[in-house]
Amino acid sequence: MSDTPHVLPEWMQSHLESYLSSDGADGHLWDAEPFGGVGKIPTLLLTTTGRKSGSKQPLPLIYGEAEGAYVIVASKGGAPQHPGWYVNLVAEPSVEVQVVADRFSAKARTATGTERAKLWEQMAKLYPPYIEYQTKTEREIPVVVLERVAG
Image (cartoon, rainbow, N blue to C red):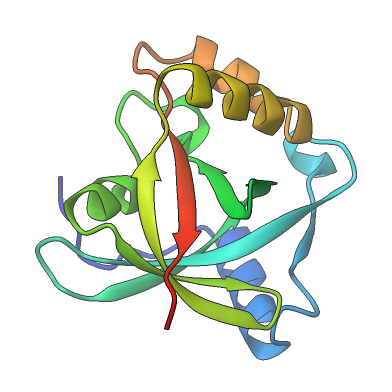
């Protein structure tokens, strides 16, 4: 799997540009209805480092919150393989996060066991299409916890 920076789908590139140009004022709340969600849901920008290229790629992702951390889901729409950003953060768990105008360094980790089950349920309530995505793939869709790094 290549990790060279890739061209984002137009709707995602537009979302990313709006988020960046407005410091999150436009883009933080994303209209999920055209994608099977309900209403506007919160998104953050996750920047991972390419495990081969070393390049940084920001992506807008749906998030939830749990115990002072942010939670994201590596669904890739139920594709058989993990999204590139997830493979990159497994290789290098130090990431950059932006929530509205708040930019910070974080450590990413994949939730497991009971924690994963609880967070999966929380995220599926926030964005119900995750449930369908899981039925489309044999892989267990990862749930990732982003914990702020002091500094």
